Image (cartoon, rainbow, N blue to C red; front, side):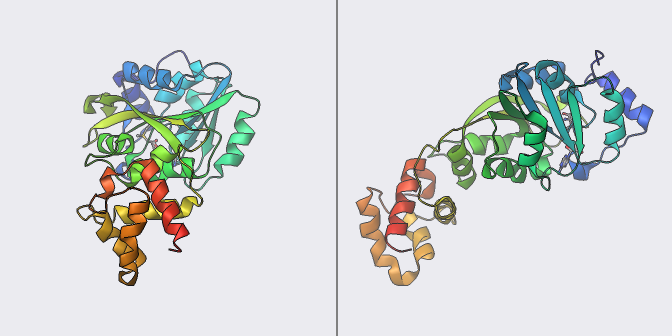
Length: 290
Ligand code: SAM
C-alpha cells in the first residue's frame, strides 16, 4: 500500500467506491492530514521490533503509517461495513491484522499475546471514537496490559483533564486515575479541518507513558480510587465536607485529627491534593477503619 489513504481525495474516492456513509453514533471522523498522522506515529516511538495496537482503523489512514513503522499492527474495528474495505486496502500488507469486534468487549490481553508474541514492546496508537474515549482508556489501564505507551487523538477537554496538575479546575478524579498508571503529556492540539466529517469539538493528541511501578504506594487500589472520588464528589466543598459524607456524620470528629496526622488542612479542596496526598489519605482512612 504505497498510495496514501489519508488525503482528502483518496478518502473521498474510497468512500464513494464502497458507498460508505459515516455513522455519527460510532464516532466516525476520519483523518485526512499526513502531517498529523506522522506526528501521532512519531510520538509512539515505534520501530521494526515493536507492535502497534490500533483501535478504530476506519479506512486505514493511521493503520498505513503504523504498518510502515512497526513490525506488526493489529487494528480493532467494530463497524461490519469497514471490514471488507480494510481487507481490500491491506490485502498485500502481511504485517496488518484486522480484528472485527468491540474493543470494550474483547479480551485484549489474549489478543495481544496472540498478535505480538516475541516483539520488544507494544503501543496503542489511535484516533479514538470520542463517545467512548474514557471507557476505552480506563479499560487499557485497569487491565494492566503490557503496553509501553498509548498515543491517542481525543477530545481536547478530556486530554487537558488527563494531563492536569493539582490546583487547576481541570484536575479531577480522571487526572488522578490516569496519572496513577501513566505519565501524561499533551503532544499537540489539532484543528477540526484535519477530519472528514469535521467534529464539533476541538481535538488533541495525548501521550501516556505507562509506568512500570505506580508513583505512590497504596494498600488497596479500589479503595484509593474510592477515596479520590469522594474528595471530588462536590467540587466546591472542602475536604472536611466531602469526607464527612464519606465516613458518615457520626464519625466527623475523627476527621480533624486524621487529616492533621498526615499534614493536610481540612479546609483545602480535593483539587489541590497531589497523588502522594491522596495515597496518604487513603492509607490513613483504612488504618482508621473506614
Ligand atoms: N483511525 C481512523 C482515522 O483516523 O481516520 C478512524 C478514526 S474514527 C475517529 C473512530 C473509529 O473507531 C471508527 O472507524 C469507528 O467505527 C471505530 N469504533 C467506534 N467504536 C468502536 C468500538 N467500540 N470498538 C472498535 N472500534 C470502534
